[in-house]
Amino acid sequence: IAVHIADSAACPRFTAALIRGIEVKASPAWLQARLAALGQRSINNIVDATNYVMYALGQPLHAYDAGKFPQIEGKWQFEVRFAREGEVVSLLAEGGKEEDRDVTLTGSELLIVDGSSDTPIGLAGVKGGRFAGVDSTTTDIIVEAAHFDPILTRKTARGLGIVIDASKRFENEPSRELPLYAQTEIIKLITDIAGGSCEGIVDIYPEPYAPTVVAVEPTRVNRLLGLSLESSEMVSILERAGITVEEKDRQLLCTGPWERTDLTIAEDFIEEIGRIYGYDHVQSVVPETVPLTELNVRHYYSEKVRETLIDLGFSEVITSSFRKKDEIQLRNALASDKSYMRSTLRKNIAETLDKNAGFVDLLGAADTRVFEIGTVFTKEEGTVSEHVSLCVGVRQKVSGYTPKDDALIADVVRALETALGAACDFTIEKGVAELNLSALMSELPAPAAYEPVTVAPEIAYAPFSVYPAVTRDIALWVPAGTTAEEVEAVLNDNAGELRVRTTLFDEFTKDDRISYAFRLVFQSKEKTPTDS
Image (tube, rainbow, N blue to C red; front, side):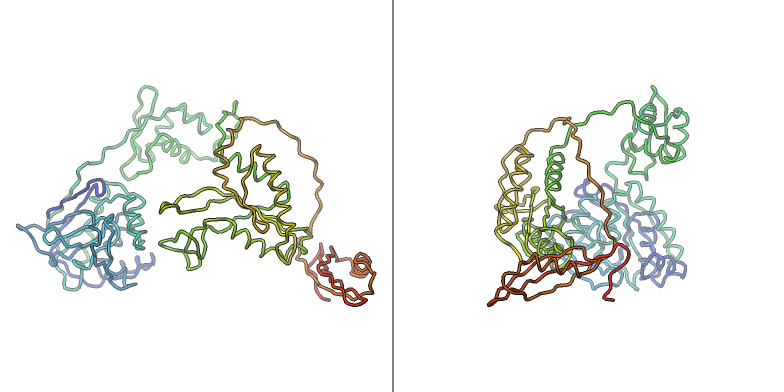
């Protein structure tokens, strides 16, 4: 077997094993049962073996029918290269769940091709091709176990909408040492359940794995974990985790096992010590000093805006970043009504106000006040950009927008300008105002590390009912000259002890009579109200 890798960064390692004389048939019962326990459908003994080893070790594998592509000078030719724009690859179905399909590539995907004909036989890290698929007539196979760049694999899988178990494992970046280990396991399993024998393995590994040695200071371990361990105890703990440790110059030189790709910096090894020693053994100790950290400008001013608006009676909402229609369309939408990224918060806030308008009387509020701080996405000259936006909205009437809403918004803008010490260029429309908060924060001065501590006014707690409220609307005709306050007083006197509030929502005059419409809200602190 001859293998040529065009870009070793995209494919750092490629192994291939030739197994001759196999018989493709149904898998043994034990293998079918184990795959079924994993939620996988049995295909045949060869495909099942590659899936089983992948789930056991975390290394994806793929088997090619060696009889379906020719040899050159007695060798099968494998090439790993990037696709050409517009190139088409025929992919196998996924476990019988779908039909084989052809995929047109953009040129950013990595392919495995038959070097003799330049025919794609697999989409590297994602799925095998139909050209060399294993079937009931297969007698000789070539098993591939390789390492592909995780970022490239993720982009290919997500871009083509082919996210399967194999691509997910490559996205998690398994160890580069794993392919050869997986080959030994798959060869043993296939020869056991399908017969045949292995006639050799080729291993293309341009830059072999070099273990990284990380220096860990015992004093830093104790400082970060709040412990008082001796260095010898740390060594014992790390060695129990399979980590090689050498003590030198008051440091622990740590080398993680090849399969632990997560151990790359000193903090990783310190975390291992804490995990194995047991965080439940760490005592709570008040630190002697608290180091000062630089304030995050975005967080600081975002919190200042939140505090100001909450003090003004606003509630923060978090709405969806996706819209049914907008400027920027998603390639892989979550749903048909969430196929675009939002370019403004205004529409979401307006919808929130409309949805909550009916609860104003129920909650005894004078109006509905909401705000949101969130990211929006815009496109200018074909370039997508994003920024943080602030949007506030007010509704004073159940029936919808009134000019009074804009007047209240103007008061809110003035309050924010006072709190931030800068002009706020809001766009106000029908009780909803929006501002590019990122642009504003970029012009504000860096916050001071400390601010004077103010004593908040005392607030008396008033218990509230945990039971739902019910409403009843009543309209009464009364003689002209009768005030709404007089009618409300009569209603309140006769509504019973469960009445919590009465609101006038309509008034109509005809001839010498006036119709007043009131909404009465009833609620109990002891049980759910009923008609009886």
